[in-house]
Image 1 (spheres, rainbow, N blue to C red):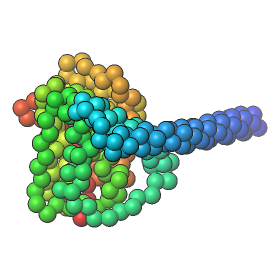
Image 2: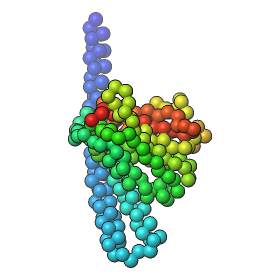
Image 3: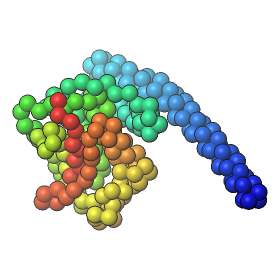
Image 4: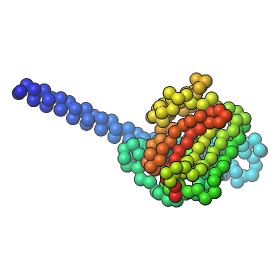
Length: 252
């Protein structure tokens, strides 16, 4: 009996030491994320401000203006990625605070469309937006905007050139509003449909295509933010082909 208790205490000490080490590593990771986010924001602000100065100069050719718009859109996209990384960490640590308000779905989708227009134009992709009248949801507008943008980004990556991206919204069951973003790409195989929402998972489409610039955080962000709002997110087949990413959120 004495030997058994001694061994248990030894195992307990090892577990406590391992737990302290994990906490230390977690603190270091959080500090690194904070430093990266802070250091990236300053140069991004300079890039966006410079684009504004070039706009006001009124001396750009149409081709140059298109390049400036592309630079500005890329800077905003990087800024969203940084914010996603910070908020994802906060949510997984249980420290995320939501600024909950009633959001008109049509206004939110129009904001998303304006943000996507430059990238879609460069890829010659088309955007279709449709929603029923009078739909509203309850949630944090900034977080839900980025959730839908991330779903759309995934569709843009895998959708074909000259293809169409569709964003739609409707009243769902259980006092929910569903928002869907679909593409005309190869779709997502069934065995991948749960895994693509895991951290660092890189989605594979039916033709084996992977996105080279994806690190698997975008869809993980969508899953965590939907859960933080009391909602769910999933992917299904689009008609006649492609992937359809859906999120159901509490109605406003």
